[in-house]
Image 1 (cartoon, rainbow, N blue to C red):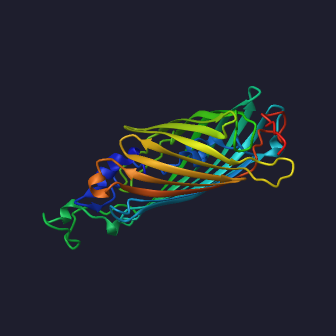
Image 2 (image 1 turned 45 degrees about the horizontal axis):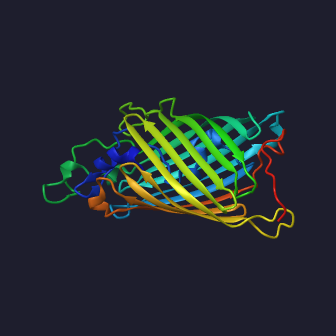
Image 3 (image 1 turned 90 degrees about the vertical axis):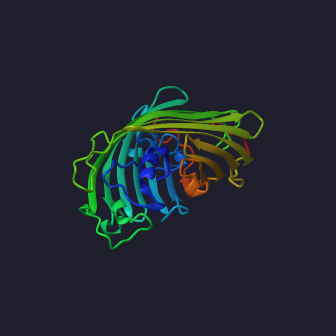
Length: 358
């Protein structure tokens, strides 16, 4: 729970300084501050556009300063299906599973999704991808841990006071579907550094278009559909050994919206030795993102060869600041990817990098 899509929910959660679970409301989705390191849950069409194989693990711990910490973690796997190659296209696949534990009433979410996308070469350096995904959301709460306004006597909370409320169901199972399109462009000299190259992704995706039911109380409430528009750029500065990495994400879900914008400055520590394989590429990126009306997020990303480690921290600046004391949550990501494939082994000459001898 780390976004302004959930800000209305968080206001409901804050009841005389104690976290409760507004199980009658419409739920928002799991996602992370490091949205560029969660491509599969941002847009299924992002799978296998930049790499033939990519595995990312994510972890976030949030709101420890307010009440029981909210913990979210998961993993996504992308793999190009090389046996399904076409003349100027190939098929990508993805699988993701995420788990979220939130608040004193132990609101839990287990979400799993399987996706497929078709990537088509549309220019020397550009690819257009369209993806579909389907899976399930399994949600749980512990009704016995819910705290109600009627259990406050004006001075303090008394658990022995009857709430007068009917206890809700403890589980919900939902089928869920997602679709998206993405345009991927990559023109670069190097594996990490890009030097004078340019890479970017621009896309749009839709979630919950089947309007799955969401109500622990059995009221028939449905989850709002969500639309995401995203853009991420990696612009190399010639002969400077640096790259500029701006990103933007806009999300709309029912009456709520979220805007995340930020900028990373990437410094190339060492370029890759292509022929000898002795030297491994490495880079460090430093910057910050702003989640409008909610948080400032300093972010650090270290890349070495085919691995990347990301760290960020949400500095809460919302209306909860009086309680949170600016403390939001620590987040980590760990990524492994193959060298950029660009469809090289899948048919066609997809954006093959031109390496210099190192």
